[in-house]
Amino acid sequence: MRNKPFIRLIHAGLLAMFVALAGGPAWANADAGKAGAPIIAADVSVEVDGPTTRFKIALSKPVTAQASLMERPDRLIIDLPEVAFHLPPDSGRQRAGVISSFRYGLFAPGRSRVVMDLAQPATVSGMTVDANAPGGTALLTIELTRTERDDFRRVAADSAAKAAQTTAAEPAAAPKDARPVVVIDPGHGGIDPGANSSNGVFEKDLVLSFAQKLQKKLEESGRYRVVMTRDKDVFVSLSDRVRAARRVQADLFISIHADSISGGQEVRGLTVYTGSERASDADSARLADRENKADAMAGVEPTDIPDEVSDILQELTLRETRSFSHSFATRLVGEFDSIARLNKNPHRQARFQVLRAHDVPSVLVELGYLSSKQDLDLLMSEEWREKMVDAMSGAVDRFFATRLARQGAAAVLP
Image (cartoon, rainbow, N blue to C red; front, side, top):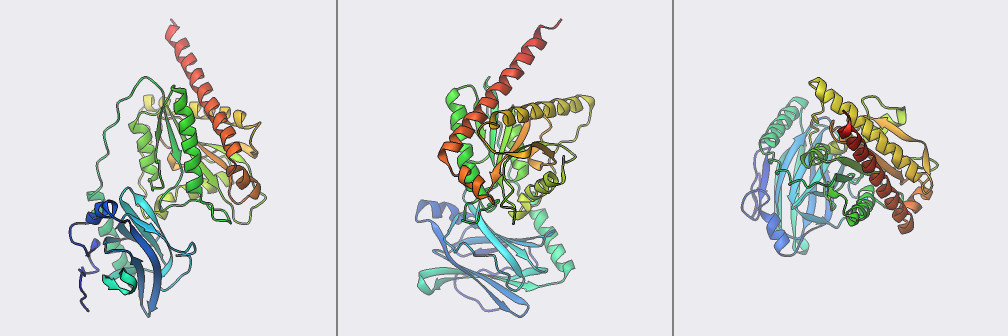
């Protein structure tokens, strides 16, 4: 194998493959990128040579990269320090060689990720960087070679084991004050864009903007402590969203989304979902299935979210939580009725992973359909969003007023 300056190649049989081009351990360049000029990805290309496929990305400076494989579905994950991707909007949509498609974006603070969907099993047979590529760029090349299923499965299993060993410990819970805690969860983010409209509006951006307005409105009242699962364009796994709510002992969890249906421009309207083991209808089941694949889209191995009930006390807690969730969903629908176009069945149920906390009342709000021009016009309207935020804030106020009244009544019972 040819050697080049600034290259370290590690055998493909190892799951953790590093290209230490600037020296130091993995992620060592992340802080350097922040301290100086940001790292920019200016171009990407895919070359096919028989059983070999080469993925090339031109960067403004050398980086440290880490590769791993995942199965079901087959994917190659490339982790990088934080990178600003200045690539054409259609990058990654065309199949080439063993790569059927790829996506990219911010994965976590200081970290970016490229996820390649594989058309057939393949392993990384080489990772190189040319720090003196034309145009003053650093050209990162990832070489993939077709392999047998058993070999792919073995390497993917090693990768999963390594990831489990390096999982960071969760931060300690923040001190809780006397106010109710409302967790707002802007769906998707970072490498996971969610739905998108025909004119390039991404769900992750729209729902973050909306969630920030709702956060501001609730905080202005002074009645609540508001926690965001994400406050910028970064990926957060479904399990981490649930853990975040439980860690701060949330009293209410609101997940914000905006759906899209291919070829369904006539389908529109707002829907509020609550969690249930059995979906209320086939459409809700299909939506929950799509949303539950968010982790896989970002190259994260799905993890079970603990929600099993082991005794009668936990079972009663789950029943009460679902009762509160339904109560809040009903209030939301009532508040929205006069200002939003509601779906024909505005309150539905399905097995959403993000609504799985058995002790936190939770709802998922689909603000509308990005595939509908009428809905998209409303979602982009500042006036409409202000009205929606006011309505949601009012529903939150009434929800907690009712809960406090119930608790007060229970306290005086003999």
